[in-house]
Image (cartoon, rainbow, N blue to C red):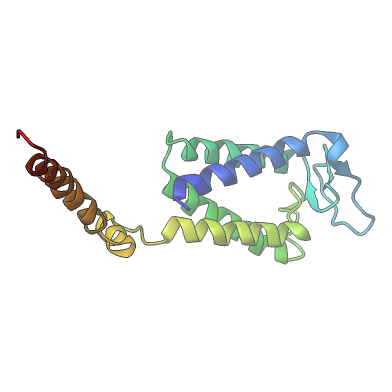
Length: 174
């Protein structure tokens, strides 16, 4: 998968998550033992799995829009993947500590958000820092197409001409 394709897929996924977080239909009220947050506007669990509030949804929409922009070529896809890896890695680490898992009461990043942020950060790190395959290496891996086309070129060059000469020598009057 190309880096631009990954950026586009990640962007669409996070754009959808962010937009779904703004619709109360997709939110389940937080359980009693959920960490308290000071910013409770649209606070709940998205699809019953991921803790979100308005700030988390806006962050997801911004990341999603940036990913769609990077996937379409308007911004740098490698820069998007690298920055996303750092951001989501930091959010995953912060979500593991009890005092920081609500980002100082502003945005919940606890529970299932930790592993979602960690997986997203790892995938973005892979696509952001992997070694791109050059055209020469790609040709070597797939095999040289010119060698595969050689028998076809030989057939075209000698096949039709030989048939014409063969028919011409056999036909009377030529």
